[in-house]
Length: 220
Image 1 (cartoon, helix red, strand yellow):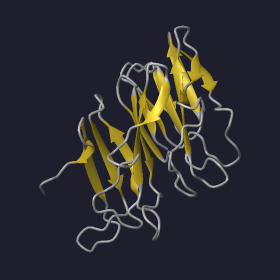
Image 2: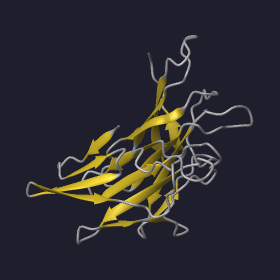
Image 3: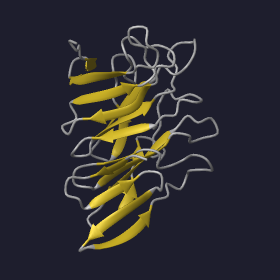
C-alpha cells in the first residue's frame, strides 16, 4: 500500500488502514478517520495525500456507492489540532466528479500541493465517448476561502484527459502534483507504446491561465 509523509515528519498517512498517526514528543496516538458516509466495500483509504504542514489530508474511496463511481474526502486540522471534514460547494462531504458514472473509480489516486489548496484526483476507469471504458480522467479541485472544494474547468470539460486517449489505457491510475500546484504528472499503465501493449506512459500537464491544463510535449 502507498504511504505519504509530510516534510516535517510530524504526521504519517498510512493507506489501507485509514489510520492517521500523529507523532508528538515521541508519543504516538492513533486516530481513525471515518467519513461517516462510507458503506461496505467502499474501501476508504485506498489512496491518501497530505500537504506539507500536515494540516490537510485527502482520503479516497474509489468504490464508493453501489456503482463504484468513487468519492474523496478532505480533512483539515484546526487551531486546536483536531481534524474536521471539508465539503464541496453543495456542503456535501462526498466530493465527487461532476460527470461521474458507474465504475469510474474516481479517487483511485490523489495528490495535493504543498499549501493544500489544490488536489488532483484520478479516475482511471472512466469512459470518454460511447465505446469501451478505461480511457481515464484526472480532475483538479481548488479550495475557496470558505473551505469549499470546486472543480477546475479544463476547456469545455471538468477533467484532464490524454491527447491520444484510448480504451484500457487507464490514464489517472497514478497522479502527482507539484508543490506549487503548477504541474501534474499522470500515469497510464495500460497504454500501448510502439505496438507493445500495456507498456505504459506518463503525461505532464502545466497550468495555463488562458487554457487551463495543457499537455506538455516531451522530446524522446
